[in-house]
Amino acid sequence: MGKVTSLPGRNCVYYSFGRCKYEEYLNPGYQSSWQCRVLAFLEKDYDGLISKADAFDLSFDQVEKIWEKRFAGIGSWADLCGSYLPAGSEDDRCACLFGNACVLMMPECTGVCRLYRPRVQKDIES
Ligand code: SF4
Ligand code: SF4
Image (cartoon, rainbow, N blue to C red; front, side):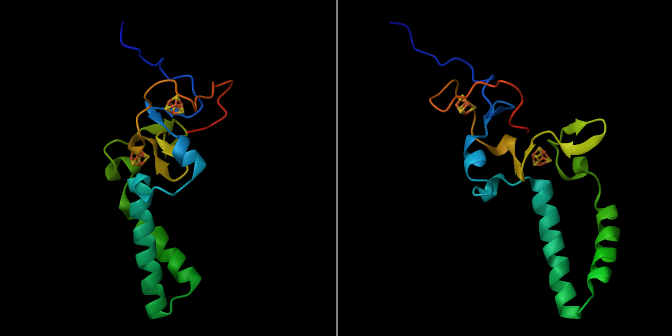
């Protein structure tokens, strides 16, 4: 008897770039290792700034100004991640972003499974 293979899951609402978003959809942010590396970098940098602001008793306005300057000097998404894929010509966020997580870090879709939900329209945005 021939080997049984699953049908491709491409038409599943949880499918994106060959990966399965089901777990992230169920528990957003639970897998911290899936966080987008660009957002993780910015978050760490911003947290560092907030700690300094506390230590030096800076006002909210001062912090905002420092962050704006710093943010302008950080560079683009592409500078911070080699896998970055622009979402669109007018949208510089990454197409692989799902919430704060990176789809490319999620498990591979192994084909149609018991969680498969056919895509009627694009009801789960990447
Ligand atoms: S590929 Fe995109 S979503 Fe993934 S880490 Fe890079 S910038 Fe973030
Ligand atoms: S078919 Fe199954 S493994 Fe593939 S994306 Fe859908 S739920 Fe995930």
